[in-house]
Amino acid sequence: MRNQSVLISGASIAGPALAYWLTHYGFDVTVVERAPELRPGGQAVDFKGATHRTVLERMGIWEAIQERRTGTTDTVFVDTDGKRIGFISGDFTGGDVEILRGDLARILYDRTSTTCDYRFGDAIAALTETTDGVQVEFEHGAPRTFDLVIGADGIHSRVRRLAFGPEADYVRHLGHYYCVAGASPWQDGPRERRTSHGFNAPGRLAISGGAKAQQMYMFSAPELDYDRGDLDAQRRIVAERFAGLGWEVPRMLAELPGFEDFYLDSLSQVRMRGYTKGRVALVGDSAYGNTLGGFGTGLAVVGAYVLAGELALADSDHAVAYARYDEIMRRYAKIAGNANAGKLLAPRTARGIRMRNWFVSGRLFALMAKIGDNAANDIDLRDYPELTRTR
Image (cartoon, rainbow, N blue to C red; front, side, top):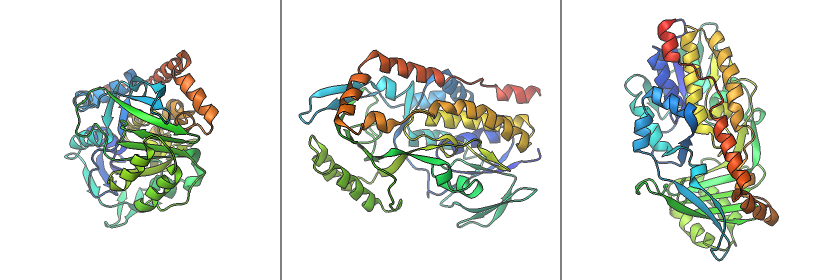
């Protein structure tokens, strides 16, 4: 192999999935993660369709996911008196199998921690590409040179910023923010069917008891300038946006300061013509993310499978492999291209809310969901392990 040492930035889903396949093909892999340790819990993620299942089965983790899957959560929309006015089935929002992000990350980590080097509590500070590799400076660790560098570090990817350019050039704000607070009800509870309740006001949605967390908020807003590290300031943003609303919102806001699990971010979409540049590549949300678009985790594991497989097929010639990866994933990643969860979940007008409630209860919504599920299988998935054994 010409390019054997690979640095992956990010240890959530895409990074460990890529590490699994790269070590399977004989690459020397290092994974760097800013968090001090593997992050447990988190919101629920899902997989849908034969393509996702095929990749998970080839990784040998399908059964482990089934063992730790969540139940199904239906969402009932209510008015200020708690009367049902709309409904979204958990069979739509939860895919074929749903699992907490932290549980999935643990499954992937357990299968890669002995075959690659994980470095928690550190991050990439600078990248300098040379003819022979990529010189990497870290925030804390000593500089090193790697043959290839892969960014699997989310929509706000530092690797993308360092190698491709400013976030504003590649990330489009979709007009809404969302917040999840409190551990998911599935964290310690039985895996049975649950019902969450959601209340809308124009441009706002509050959900109690959802699959992703005990509380979920969504609100329309232009891009906000806030400190991503100041959770108290972010809690104030949510409290201000939802002040004065009825239903159970006052109770929810009163509980909000007591939740250690808290996350606020924009609904955003990554738009790139290609996911590779020189010796650097992007996979998962850093390349084709669309917040709450419904396909992110599936795209991450499929993208990791394709990228590693093409590198193995090309005998680690990154120029050849990256070109094929770009071609395959540009087409497949279109499945996340048109979704905007904010428009569906937090319409900006009272009329829009009424139309949403009518829409999700009708046949057209069911048809749209079926079309989306079919799109998740719209890829010619190569059997890379078999191809690399016989080439």
